[in-house]
Image 1 (cartoon, rainbow, N blue to C red):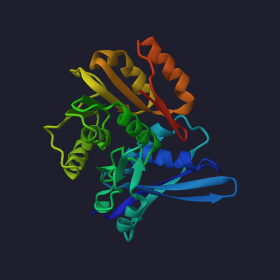
Image 2: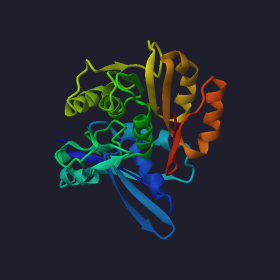
Image 3: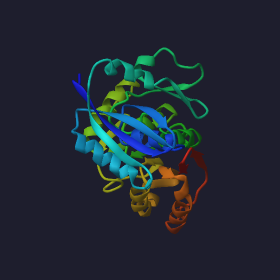
Image 4: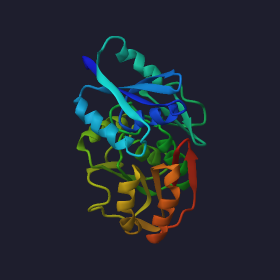
Length: 281
């Protein structure tokens, strides 16, 4: 058990509460608390001490790039007292889309009737299911996956999208991430969902470099720059009639990304918005 947690305080204008919470989630925070003071709002995001503070600052700085009015106000560490149990309350069961529900493993047994459970341990990898960009992909996946489909999840993070694809009827999923450290978390989450690496094979790899398709479904919930870099190779990775699902995009990036799709011979068939976030298939 960690003896302490890192914290980073984000500050922005009042009304930016959702943005601050999304930034914390994108950067790997395992919980946060918010305080509004007049025209300013502050969010204290907590991070595991299994990585040094500089690692989390780098991840947060990357996520902050589009938000010039949000700044890092403070940082430090807090001793692990009650936090190691209290943080679990930040992850209640979350219904997503028409028929999915995301649950931390300690909520097993509380699944809403009629929904497919996705058991995800909230670790340091992105993709707990509580971020809008992940919810967008899950909703689009529900419409796209057909029984027996093959899929690839690029930038798999926690593995939640690969797990969802399998539970929605896919027969095999390729899951890859450029960060080898997240693969152990994916394996843990596969086990929570009674899935094996025979059904979901894990690979360390950058985007579609060296990927051998084709697959029926491709998901990528990252940010716009790597998505744009990947687009020229998506067509070759998809089987005839295949569908790619992209998220991690801000709503204001919609027109730029739709133009890039067209330039690469791809067309949008469905799209979703949640808060400031947008996704497309």
